[in-house]
Length: 189
Image (tube, rainbow, N blue to C red; front, side):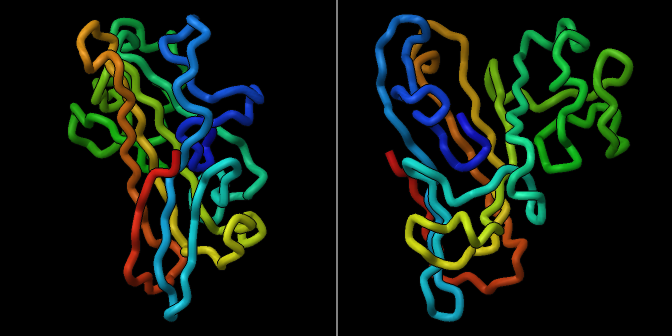
């Protein structure tokens, strides 16, 4: 994974991006990424990820050369919350989903507090990206849409069909002030 729209990426290893099942040298996917396209002032604008991304890591307005951070938590972290730094530093300030058990609106993680990341599955990966760096829009050569995208990826540790699936939720927020019309969202694979 990359914090740049690449749901599966060959770039870190130079090899197919998804080995499935892990450790068996079987590869099911070389690369895939999310695509957004829409019209701004009747001109098509894109923000896509394929063999390379047009997104930058971090929230809207972040340094496009900033840290490429993936936050990874496991349901098993509930038993020992101090064992995982991402659990303790879950980026709720950036929009990461969490459970506010004490209802105060402030992330007070277990075991000192009662809050924790929202566990949709047994493992949750979360990151935020944006398309604000015009220099990154080299695939189609358009101007940025002006979006920030918060991505949640999760999976289940099960022996049934759910154990062979990866789920992806991408929430797009218009942060650039553009009026975007006729927006389409897709998955390139």
